[in-house]
Image (cartoon, rainbow, N blue to C red):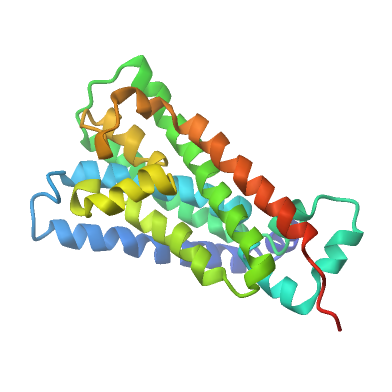
Length: 254
């Protein structure tokens, strides 16, 4: 329904799509400006950083397109409109994700995909069947990992009611973090996104394997093929948190 209503005004949609594309592209402009003054960043070339940017941005764009609306849940908890969702014969999470579905967010995905393809043209990678398989796999599983964090953050809002910015620190902040090589960050932070909130498995771990570099935080090379397992492990606590949060909902009392 939301897609049909959006496409009813095609020029307006085209303008908002372009605005979304251009706004997210400024993140990459920062990298371009940075490399106009330096030859490398943390031992990584421009093409390698562009590869990290493209994989992270594309994965996050897919997750944001499908589940970005769950960040609005806190507002529904505060005004009690979650009650309406509970009355409908459809999963609440699906309803929250589809609420005011913003098709313009595909601009972020397209922008990240363009940078990813460009970086692949610049890089000289010794391709193997394993690396070819890992490339689309890291984007899809990266989107699943980001999606699990979004759902867990939405569940947190059943209690916090106004915790969207806390969640954004892990989603939007995590996306920005993964656009740069792990060598520029403190090792405690790198270990935190490897063994704590495993955002490193979105692109750092598999991407460094594709680039022929050592994996972060002392991980073995076979860990590059673990993102699907990590994504599944992330969705288990995220799903449980969602169920517990939904069952704890008590409306507004008004």
